[in-house]
Image (tube, rainbow, N blue to C red; front, side, top):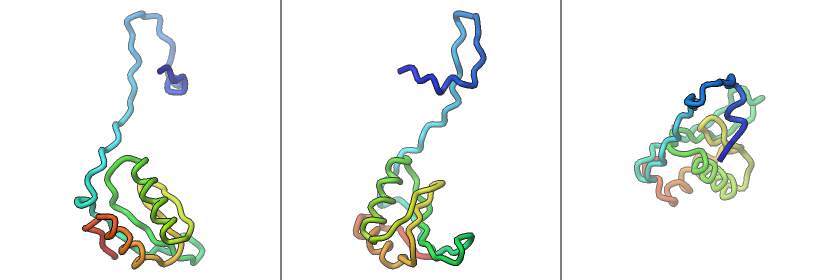
Length: 112
């Protein structure tokens, strides 16, 4: 697979033995649900007074985090997003998110 976007900042070399060094960091492997230590808290900072529920502490791939975030938003019936390793669910849904996570098998989820 030749992805040209990966080579945008690389200067051309005439050396036929030169190999491009890719500084890619491998994604963390998703640990099991029972071992995840998820923290659920209410946040209103920089949100114009609107409350959101933040779920932090997920260890795993971005795809798995997006799947979990989508599932939480659908089951709570509200909007939200997944940014910077955090799941943002609109409104004060701490208790509902906690029960959903416990039903899904996340044993170490706690509300702060």
